[in-house]
Image 1: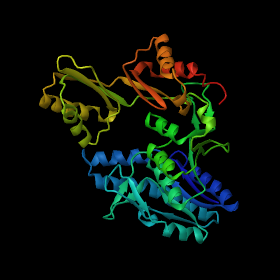
Image 2: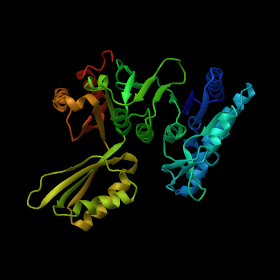
Image 3: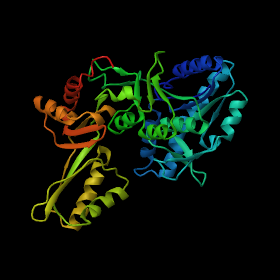
Image 4: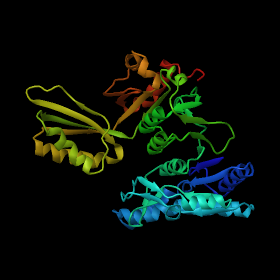
Length: 405
Protein backbone atom coordinates (compact mmCIF):
# COMPACT_ATOMS: atom_id res chain seq x y z
CA UNK A 1 0.00 0.00 0.00
CA UNK A 2 1.42 3.41 -1.01
CA UNK A 3 0.65 6.00 1.65
CA UNK A 4 1.40 9.72 1.63
CA UNK A 5 1.46 11.26 5.09
CA UNK A 6 1.80 14.88 6.14
CA UNK A 7 2.89 16.05 9.60
CA UNK A 8 2.18 19.63 10.61
CA UNK A 9 4.26 22.06 12.63
CA UNK A 10 3.01 20.95 16.04
CA UNK A 11 3.61 17.30 15.10
CA UNK A 12 7.31 18.07 14.47
CA UNK A 13 7.51 20.93 16.96
CA UNK A 14 10.41 19.53 18.99
CA UNK A 15 13.14 16.90 18.76
CA UNK A 16 11.09 14.54 20.91
CA UNK A 17 8.02 14.99 18.70
CA UNK A 18 10.09 14.34 15.59
CA UNK A 19 11.31 11.13 17.22
CA UNK A 20 7.69 10.21 17.96
CA UNK A 21 6.84 10.68 14.28
CA UNK A 22 9.83 8.50 13.35
CA UNK A 23 8.56 5.74 15.64
CA UNK A 24 5.10 5.99 14.07
CA UNK A 25 6.61 5.77 10.57
CA UNK A 26 8.68 2.77 11.60
CA UNK A 27 5.48 0.91 12.53
CA UNK A 28 3.90 1.68 9.15
CA UNK A 29 7.08 0.60 7.39
CA UNK A 30 7.16 -2.69 9.30
CA UNK A 31 3.58 -3.33 8.14
CA UNK A 32 4.89 -3.29 4.57
CA UNK A 33 3.66 0.13 3.41
CA UNK A 34 5.54 2.35 1.01
CA UNK A 35 5.79 5.80 2.61
CA UNK A 36 6.14 9.32 1.28
CA UNK A 37 6.13 11.77 4.18
CA UNK A 38 5.63 15.53 3.87
CA UNK A 39 6.67 17.73 6.77
CA UNK A 40 6.01 21.31 7.77
CA UNK A 41 8.47 23.56 9.55
CA UNK A 42 8.68 23.11 13.32
CA UNK A 43 5.93 25.05 15.12
CA UNK A 44 6.78 28.76 15.25
CA UNK A 45 9.73 28.47 12.85
CA UNK A 46 8.07 30.15 9.87
CA UNK A 47 7.02 33.10 12.05
CA UNK A 48 10.58 33.32 13.41
CA UNK A 49 12.00 33.45 9.89
CA UNK A 50 9.47 36.09 8.82
CA UNK A 51 10.43 38.21 11.83
CA UNK A 52 14.09 37.92 10.89
CA UNK A 53 13.29 39.11 7.38
CA UNK A 54 11.41 42.15 8.66
CA UNK A 55 14.23 42.97 11.05
CA UNK A 56 16.44 43.17 8.00
CA UNK A 57 14.07 45.26 5.86
CA UNK A 58 10.52 46.63 5.92
CA UNK A 59 9.97 45.30 2.41
CA UNK A 60 11.59 41.86 1.97
CA UNK A 61 12.21 40.84 -1.63
CA UNK A 62 9.62 38.10 -2.40
CA UNK A 63 12.16 35.79 -4.03
CA UNK A 64 14.61 36.03 -1.15
CA UNK A 65 11.81 35.65 1.40
CA UNK A 66 10.83 32.34 -0.20
CA UNK A 67 14.46 31.18 -0.13
CA UNK A 68 14.51 31.97 3.59
CA UNK A 69 11.14 30.46 4.51
CA UNK A 70 11.80 27.20 2.66
CA UNK A 71 14.61 26.40 5.10
CA UNK A 72 12.09 25.64 7.85
CA UNK A 73 10.66 22.61 6.08
CA UNK A 74 14.10 21.54 4.86
CA UNK A 75 15.29 21.38 8.47
CA UNK A 76 12.30 19.26 9.55
CA UNK A 77 12.79 16.84 6.65
CA UNK A 78 16.49 16.35 7.38
CA UNK A 79 15.93 15.87 11.11
CA UNK A 80 13.20 13.29 10.56
CA UNK A 81 15.37 11.37 8.09
CA UNK A 82 18.20 11.42 10.65
CA UNK A 83 15.87 10.06 13.34
CA UNK A 84 14.74 7.19 11.11
CA UNK A 85 18.27 6.29 10.06
CA UNK A 86 19.37 6.34 13.69
CA UNK A 87 16.64 3.76 14.38
CA UNK A 88 17.94 1.59 11.54
CA UNK A 89 15.33 2.42 8.89
CA UNK A 90 16.21 3.50 5.33
CA UNK A 91 15.16 7.09 4.73
CA UNK A 92 16.07 10.01 2.53
CA UNK A 93 15.03 13.65 2.64
CA UNK A 94 14.22 15.61 -0.52
CA UNK A 95 13.64 19.31 -1.03
CA UNK A 96 11.51 20.68 -3.87
CA UNK A 97 14.11 20.64 -6.65
CA UNK A 98 15.02 17.03 -5.80
CA UNK A 99 11.38 15.91 -5.60
CA UNK A 100 10.78 17.84 -8.87
CA UNK A 101 7.78 19.85 -7.66
CA UNK A 102 7.30 22.50 -10.35
CA UNK A 103 5.25 25.65 -9.71
CA UNK A 104 4.48 29.00 -11.30
CA UNK A 105 6.62 31.96 -10.23
CA UNK A 106 4.15 33.67 -7.87
CA UNK A 107 6.49 33.94 -4.86
CA UNK A 108 4.72 33.44 -1.56
CA UNK A 109 1.57 31.98 -3.14
CA UNK A 110 2.81 29.69 -5.91
CA UNK A 111 0.64 26.99 -7.45
CA UNK A 112 1.89 23.53 -8.36
CA UNK A 113 1.94 22.96 -12.13
CA UNK A 114 3.53 19.53 -12.36
CA UNK A 115 5.39 16.88 -10.36
CA UNK A 116 8.00 14.66 -12.00
CA UNK A 117 7.77 11.47 -9.94
CA UNK A 118 10.85 9.70 -11.35
CA UNK A 119 13.13 10.38 -8.34
CA UNK A 120 10.34 9.68 -5.84
CA UNK A 121 9.52 6.33 -7.46
CA UNK A 122 13.19 5.38 -7.61
CA UNK A 123 13.61 6.05 -3.89
CA UNK A 124 10.48 4.03 -3.07
CA UNK A 125 11.65 1.13 -5.23
CA UNK A 126 14.92 0.96 -3.29
CA UNK A 127 12.91 0.64 -0.08
CA UNK A 128 13.43 4.13 1.30
CA UNK A 129 11.00 6.10 3.40
CA UNK A 130 10.91 9.35 1.42
CA UNK A 131 10.72 12.57 3.46
CA UNK A 132 9.71 15.62 1.39
CA UNK A 133 9.97 19.22 2.54
CA UNK A 134 6.45 20.63 2.22
CA UNK A 135 5.29 24.15 1.36
CA UNK A 136 7.81 24.67 -1.44
CA UNK A 137 8.46 24.17 -5.13
CA UNK A 138 10.68 25.44 -7.95
CA UNK A 139 9.65 27.64 -10.85
CA UNK A 140 10.70 27.38 -14.50
CA UNK A 141 13.85 29.40 -13.72
CA UNK A 142 14.89 26.98 -10.95
CA UNK A 143 14.07 29.48 -8.21
CA UNK A 144 12.58 28.36 -4.91
CA UNK A 145 8.90 29.23 -4.41
CA UNK A 146 6.52 28.74 -1.49
CA UNK A 147 2.84 27.81 -1.64
CA UNK A 148 1.42 30.06 1.07
CA UNK A 149 0.34 29.29 4.62
CA UNK A 150 -0.77 25.69 5.02
CA UNK A 151 0.96 24.83 1.75
CA UNK A 152 2.34 21.54 3.07
CA UNK A 153 -1.21 20.14 2.91
CA UNK A 154 -1.24 20.91 -0.81
CA UNK A 155 2.21 19.37 -1.26
CA UNK A 156 0.99 16.14 0.34
CA UNK A 157 -2.25 15.86 -1.64
CA UNK A 158 -0.50 16.78 -4.92
CA UNK A 159 2.14 14.09 -4.31
CA UNK A 160 -0.60 11.56 -3.51
CA UNK A 161 -2.35 12.44 -6.76
CA UNK A 162 0.85 12.30 -8.84
CA UNK A 163 1.94 8.98 -7.33
CA UNK A 164 -1.61 7.54 -7.39
CA UNK A 165 -1.27 6.76 -3.69
CA UNK A 166 -3.91 4.68 -1.94
CA UNK A 167 -4.55 7.38 0.65
CA UNK A 168 -3.25 10.72 1.91
CA UNK A 169 -3.16 11.08 5.68
CA UNK A 170 -2.92 14.57 7.18
CA UNK A 171 -1.60 14.38 10.74
CA UNK A 172 -2.25 17.46 12.82
CA UNK A 173 -2.93 18.59 16.39
CA UNK A 174 -6.70 17.94 16.18
CA UNK A 175 -8.55 14.64 16.04
CA UNK A 176 -10.35 15.44 12.80
CA UNK A 177 -13.07 17.75 11.51
CA UNK A 178 -15.72 18.76 14.07
CA UNK A 179 -19.26 20.11 13.83
CA UNK A 180 -17.88 23.35 15.35
CA UNK A 181 -14.77 24.58 17.09
CA UNK A 182 -14.66 22.46 20.30
CA UNK A 183 -13.16 25.45 22.12
CA UNK A 184 -16.43 27.31 21.53
CA UNK A 185 -18.97 24.46 21.56
CA UNK A 186 -18.22 21.90 24.26
CA UNK A 187 -20.69 19.47 22.66
CA UNK A 188 -19.08 19.63 19.19
CA UNK A 189 -18.79 16.19 17.61
CA UNK A 190 -16.11 14.73 15.37
CA UNK A 191 -17.41 14.08 11.85
CA UNK A 192 -16.45 10.62 10.63
CA UNK A 193 -16.88 11.39 6.93
CA UNK A 194 -17.23 14.68 5.06
CA UNK A 195 -17.45 15.52 1.35
CA UNK A 196 -14.81 17.37 -0.63
CA UNK A 197 -17.33 20.15 -1.31
CA UNK A 198 -18.17 20.61 2.37
CA UNK A 199 -14.51 20.56 3.37
CA UNK A 200 -13.70 23.12 0.69
CA UNK A 201 -16.41 25.44 1.98
CA UNK A 202 -15.27 25.02 5.58
CA UNK A 203 -11.66 25.72 4.61
CA UNK A 204 -12.67 28.87 2.69
CA UNK A 205 -14.89 30.06 5.55
CA UNK A 206 -12.31 29.98 8.32
CA UNK A 207 -11.79 26.36 9.40
CA UNK A 208 -8.05 25.85 9.83
CA UNK A 209 -7.98 22.04 9.49
CA UNK A 210 -6.99 21.87 5.79
CA UNK A 211 -5.75 24.40 3.27
CA UNK A 212 -8.44 25.03 0.65
CA UNK A 213 -6.14 24.35 -2.31
CA UNK A 214 -5.29 20.92 -0.93
CA UNK A 215 -8.99 20.01 -0.85
CA UNK A 216 -9.40 21.31 -4.41
CA UNK A 217 -6.59 19.02 -5.60
CA UNK A 218 -8.01 16.09 -3.62
CA UNK A 219 -11.42 16.54 -5.24
CA UNK A 220 -10.00 16.94 -8.75
CA UNK A 221 -7.92 13.76 -8.56
CA UNK A 222 -10.25 11.81 -6.20
CA UNK A 223 -7.60 11.44 -3.50
CA UNK A 224 -9.11 10.10 -0.25
CA UNK A 225 -7.82 12.26 2.61
CA UNK A 226 -7.76 11.15 6.23
CA UNK A 227 -7.44 14.00 8.75
CA UNK A 228 -6.24 12.67 12.10
CA UNK A 229 -4.24 13.48 15.20
CA UNK A 230 -0.51 12.89 15.56
CA UNK A 231 -0.91 12.31 19.27
CA UNK A 232 -3.62 9.63 19.52
CA UNK A 233 -4.27 6.47 17.51
CA UNK A 234 -8.01 7.01 16.93
CA UNK A 235 -9.53 7.30 13.47
CA UNK A 236 -10.10 10.87 12.33
CA UNK A 237 -12.26 12.28 9.52
CA UNK A 238 -12.30 10.95 5.96
CA UNK A 239 -12.67 13.54 3.20
CA UNK A 240 -14.23 11.82 0.19
CA UNK A 241 -16.86 12.17 -2.55
CA UNK A 242 -20.43 13.00 -1.58
CA UNK A 243 -22.67 9.99 -0.98
CA UNK A 244 -26.39 9.52 -0.27
CA UNK A 245 -25.79 9.19 3.48
CA UNK A 246 -24.15 12.61 3.68
CA UNK A 247 -27.08 14.26 1.90
CA UNK A 248 -29.44 13.13 4.66
CA UNK A 249 -27.70 15.55 7.05
CA UNK A 250 -28.98 19.09 6.42
CA UNK A 251 -26.16 20.99 8.13
CA UNK A 252 -22.82 19.30 8.71
CA UNK A 253 -20.91 22.01 10.58
CA UNK A 254 -20.81 25.62 11.76
CA UNK A 255 -17.64 27.63 11.26
CA UNK A 256 -16.51 31.22 11.69
CA UNK A 257 -13.89 33.72 10.60
CA UNK A 258 -12.74 36.82 12.48
CA UNK A 259 -10.04 37.66 9.95
CA UNK A 260 -12.13 39.75 7.57
CA UNK A 261 -12.95 43.46 7.32
CA UNK A 262 -15.73 45.36 5.56
CA UNK A 263 -15.44 48.28 3.14
CA UNK A 264 -18.41 50.34 1.94
CA UNK A 265 -18.29 52.75 -0.99
CA UNK A 266 -21.14 55.27 -0.75
CA UNK A 267 -22.74 57.18 -3.59
CA UNK A 268 -21.40 55.13 -6.48
CA UNK A 269 -22.64 56.18 -9.96
CA UNK A 270 -24.81 53.32 -11.21
CA UNK A 271 -23.65 52.77 -14.77
CA UNK A 272 -21.87 50.00 -16.72
CA UNK A 273 -18.17 49.53 -15.99
CA UNK A 274 -18.11 51.24 -12.60
CA UNK A 275 -17.80 48.00 -10.61
CA UNK A 276 -14.86 46.94 -12.78
CA UNK A 277 -13.11 50.26 -12.13
CA UNK A 278 -13.53 49.73 -8.39
CA UNK A 279 -12.53 46.08 -8.11
CA UNK A 280 -9.89 45.77 -10.83
CA UNK A 281 -7.14 47.65 -8.92
CA UNK A 282 -7.98 45.68 -5.77
CA UNK A 283 -7.55 42.41 -7.67
CA UNK A 284 -4.34 43.64 -9.30
CA UNK A 285 -2.97 44.25 -5.80
CA UNK A 286 -3.46 40.55 -5.05
CA UNK A 287 -6.31 41.18 -2.59
CA UNK A 288 -9.11 38.61 -2.52
CA UNK A 289 -12.62 40.06 -2.24
CA UNK A 290 -15.13 37.75 -0.59
CA UNK A 291 -18.70 39.04 -0.22
CA UNK A 292 -20.02 41.84 -2.44
CA UNK A 293 -23.39 43.56 -1.95
CA UNK A 294 -24.77 46.34 -4.15
CA UNK A 295 -27.85 48.24 -3.03
CA UNK A 296 -30.77 49.03 -5.31
CA UNK A 297 -30.06 52.12 -7.38
CA UNK A 298 -31.87 55.33 -6.50
CA UNK A 299 -31.63 58.23 -8.94
CA UNK A 300 -28.59 56.66 -10.59
CA UNK A 301 -26.65 56.28 -7.33
CA UNK A 302 -25.95 53.11 -5.35
CA UNK A 303 -23.76 51.80 -2.50
CA UNK A 304 -21.32 48.87 -2.70
CA UNK A 305 -20.11 46.88 0.30
CA UNK A 306 -17.51 44.11 0.21
CA UNK A 307 -15.25 42.15 2.52
CA UNK A 308 -11.50 41.51 2.33
CA UNK A 309 -8.99 39.67 4.54
CA UNK A 310 -8.23 41.79 7.61
CA UNK A 311 -4.51 41.64 6.83
CA UNK A 312 -5.24 43.47 3.54
CA UNK A 313 -7.74 45.95 5.01
CA UNK A 314 -5.60 49.11 5.10
CA UNK A 315 -4.21 48.48 1.63
CA UNK A 316 -7.66 47.72 0.20
CA UNK A 317 -9.15 50.79 1.90
CA UNK A 318 -6.56 53.07 0.32
CA UNK A 319 -7.06 51.52 -3.12
CA UNK A 320 -10.85 51.82 -2.73
CA UNK A 321 -10.52 55.51 -1.84
CA UNK A 322 -8.35 56.18 -4.87
CA UNK A 323 -10.81 54.33 -7.12
CA UNK A 324 -13.76 56.12 -5.51
CA UNK A 325 -12.22 59.48 -6.40
CA UNK A 326 -11.80 58.42 -10.02
CA UNK A 327 -15.39 57.17 -10.42
CA UNK A 328 -16.94 60.06 -8.54
CA UNK A 329 -18.22 58.16 -5.50
CA UNK A 330 -19.11 60.14 -2.38
CA UNK A 331 -17.04 58.45 0.34
CA UNK A 332 -15.48 55.19 1.56
CA UNK A 333 -16.06 53.65 5.00
CA UNK A 334 -14.21 50.78 6.67
CA UNK A 335 -14.95 48.42 9.55
CA UNK A 336 -12.42 45.96 10.97
CA UNK A 337 -14.71 44.80 13.81
CA UNK A 338 -16.76 42.21 11.96
CA UNK A 339 -16.86 38.44 11.85
CA UNK A 340 -18.47 35.83 9.65
CA UNK A 341 -20.44 32.83 10.82
CA UNK A 342 -21.42 30.09 8.35
CA UNK A 343 -23.36 26.86 8.16
CA UNK A 344 -22.28 24.18 5.67
CA UNK A 345 -23.91 20.97 4.46
CA UNK A 346 -24.50 19.14 1.17
CA UNK A 347 -27.97 18.27 2.50
CA UNK A 348 -28.96 21.92 2.13
CA UNK A 349 -29.33 21.36 -1.63
CA UNK A 350 -32.50 19.36 -1.09
CA UNK A 351 -33.94 20.97 2.05
CA UNK A 352 -35.76 24.33 1.78
CA UNK A 353 -35.97 26.78 4.66
CA UNK A 354 -32.45 26.30 6.01
CA UNK A 355 -31.45 29.95 5.55
CA UNK A 356 -34.66 31.16 7.18
CA UNK A 357 -34.02 28.91 10.16
CA UNK A 358 -30.51 30.34 10.49
CA UNK A 359 -31.72 33.95 10.28
CA UNK A 360 -34.51 33.34 12.80
CA UNK A 361 -32.14 31.65 15.25
CA UNK A 362 -29.78 34.62 15.13
CA UNK A 363 -32.69 37.07 15.43
CA UNK A 364 -34.04 35.23 18.49
CA UNK A 365 -30.61 35.62 20.08
CA UNK A 366 -30.58 39.35 19.32
CA UNK A 367 -27.70 39.05 16.82
CA UNK A 368 -27.95 41.52 13.94
CA UNK A 369 -26.99 40.40 10.42
CA UNK A 370 -24.92 42.91 8.41
CA UNK A 371 -24.36 40.96 5.18
CA UNK A 372 -25.50 37.62 3.74
CA UNK A 373 -23.88 35.28 1.21
CA UNK A 374 -25.17 31.90 0.02
CA UNK A 375 -24.25 28.98 -2.20
CA UNK A 376 -25.83 25.58 -2.77
CA UNK A 377 -24.26 24.16 0.38
CA UNK A 378 -23.56 27.13 2.66
CA UNK A 379 -25.06 30.26 4.16
CA UNK A 380 -22.77 32.94 5.63
CA UNK A 381 -23.68 35.98 7.70
CA UNK A 382 -21.43 38.91 8.56
CA UNK A 383 -22.11 40.08 12.10
CA UNK A 384 -20.47 42.16 14.82
CA UNK A 385 -17.14 40.62 15.84
CA UNK A 386 -18.18 40.51 19.51
CA UNK A 387 -21.13 38.24 18.66
CA UNK A 388 -19.27 35.62 16.64
CA UNK A 389 -18.68 32.97 19.30
CA UNK A 390 -22.22 33.27 20.67
CA UNK A 391 -23.57 32.98 17.12
CA UNK A 392 -21.63 29.75 16.61
CA UNK A 393 -23.14 28.32 19.80
CA UNK A 394 -26.65 29.45 18.82
CA UNK A 395 -26.45 27.85 15.36
CA UNK A 396 -24.81 24.67 16.62
CA UNK A 397 -27.77 24.21 18.94
CA UNK A 398 -30.38 25.33 16.38
CA UNK A 399 -29.34 22.61 13.92
CA UNK A 400 -28.89 19.92 16.62
CA UNK A 401 -25.23 19.39 15.79
CA UNK A 402 -24.45 18.34 19.34
CA UNK A 403 -26.29 15.10 18.67
CA UNK A 404 -24.42 12.02 17.46
CA UNK A 405 -23.27 12.35 13.86
